[in-house]
Length: 187
Image (cartoon, rainbow, N blue to C red; front, top):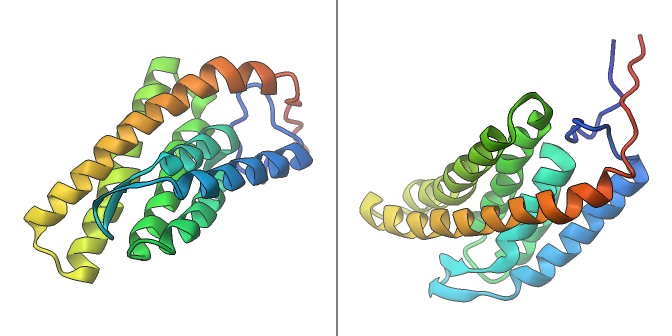
């Protein structure tokens, strides 16, 4: 049996139609590009605080890993215009995947486990690792300096993923559950 859920979206209460999925992806991506332009440089051009972190995290939770990665790609491209290009590009894709993968399996776990996995994966996969790996392997920074800057991104990811969880649970889910259709399996 194959599932029509080719967008890899969370399917606990059914899937969204492709048109709604694309519209949400466009809305979250456009918002992320705008929010990405608001930033407070901490260690320019490598680390900055920005609400742009929020949109790939939300896209991953709502649209799944594919939606999170696509949103992260475009938000990362917009961030790459102002920072060292690989950090926002890889980091935003990782942010979308970090919440998209646990959200894909959301219906198979308790809400507390889902929230915990989203927070931990956003902190490590979306926040710490992209900055640390690019700074050490590509730029050649000492690991101690890279740990400091990557820790700032990890803390920022924790803040924004908590906001994203609250938005999804209290605003997005009640609205989108009206538009989800049951998954139909075919042979």
